[in-house]
Image 1: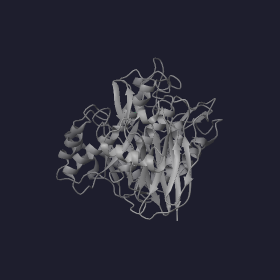
Image 2: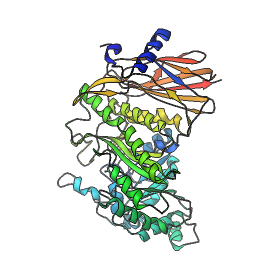
Image 3: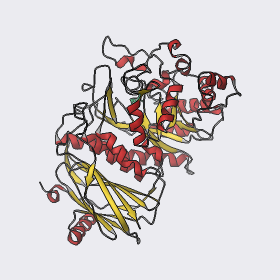
Image 4: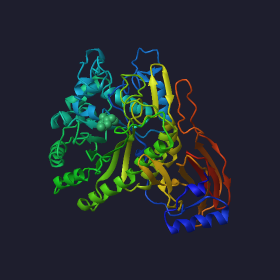
Length: 533
Ligand code: AHR
């Protein structure tokens, strides 16, 4: 089917724009960019990460132990560090997730061989007869060492569900007080780290409406106030309150309203978390093997995050017109039902295909376009869990297609949004419930100094898209290059045996004085970098 037939034009404006584009340039689409009118800064932290004590995430994915035959830096998997550096990972959230609200930080300090074995929340999800006992070999010192090796900022989620304000405050002091001041700081120094950890990002609980305490929003607001009022101020914190379950059928607006009602008259948090999973667990959809409607179903559910961000932001604005609180999407990703794990005890791990890479491109473009609202986002989770960048098992390690999207989008980090006009008509696509509409082309752009970055995702399984990027406002191109992730097979994936099936390759780009032309393959994510004169 040719794209012209496949596209169902959404508005007459779009018909006009598309037709003009075809006549003038022989391209299917023309995107107009205004690099001379840069907008909001795209926070580098939007490209952030998350690891939890769950299945094979920490133990094996990240921590192999100092005596392992797997190359490691003091017990931390070397390849994990190197690859995270390569994508400029800006932050790392830890220790959970649901694990965080059962975690007591003192269990993870001191001599490794003396640390206690403790209960892990995820025990309940382990296969019968398998054990998830927490060995506490990876604690706050190991976490900070990992962050320092990667050059990432730590983001620590504190225990509100089963902890106390004083346990939280002691942890903050232990981490941030200078040696020679508090006894807690001296204890940290005696445990090998005289330099304070300087942790700025603190999550005050996780999913407090669920595994973090089953609270009502007004109950959580009261807890939040109690937990932050006596916060030890060694470093100006960025405090992140638990926000809604954004992928709920109703978007969970009641949580946002209830929390901010409960905060009336008090200082609002710096950050308000949203969790948004493209949640396929209630369906029969599989991660590795799927049909064309199932491809589109995942993308369709994924782009709903756009409206979820917008609607919670609007609601927050009613209570916080000065916009002191920003959004932190600290868990996002495609989550398939169980059954395709790397190994039975690697719970919540799943194969990652080109479909998930395309979903990532759509998501990042949405985040970039909401730059004024979102200060941070964290993929769930970086290794061996849900929407992973890596799968690791013993000595085997592979970068998934999602990894490569992170690598391509890194040049947006810290850039300024560039206004884009994207008139490409929506696609009318087959999905589980019949037909639905999906953006025909996803795009976002940013500029840093004279370097313009444009990312483009063509979600169509049918048609390539000849695309023209036209620069307005007097911008002139000097040089440009492009790379693309695509594959003939929409189910393409990277495996331990075949690790480079899906990876970026150069894409031809024609450079004119004020325009670039390229053809986006079907089912692809592309990066265009253009030097402006
Ligand atoms: O990422 C897996 C789990 O999903 C996290 O522990 C929890 O916060 C969420 O429900």
